[in-house]
Length: 110
Image 1 (spheres, rainbow, N blue to C red):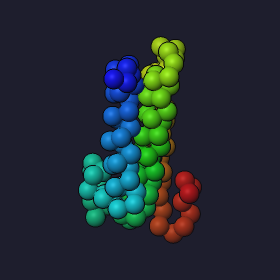
Image 2: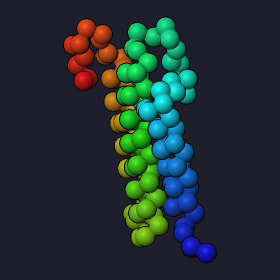
Image 3: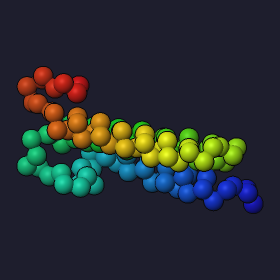
Image 4: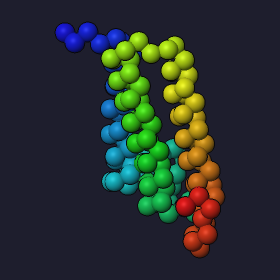
């Protein structure tokens, strides 16, 4: 048995799911996985897939790193809070980029 702490296993499982979904959104353009997105949106599917997929992939990599930290060491108790703050800021960035998209090439988030 590996002897991994249960919190490390939880982070690894979450990272695996996020990495798979991020891949499907980013590279396969499965935008139907995005809640509230449809073809009537002013943001084209390839832009939404790129921005959202990259966000999900970044969060998945962050979960993998945190899981690795819990697997090899006993990190401080606030590490999960830092991870939550990183997720919050990354999702806020995603929402900003999608809400400020303009098709004429003057996208301030580009």
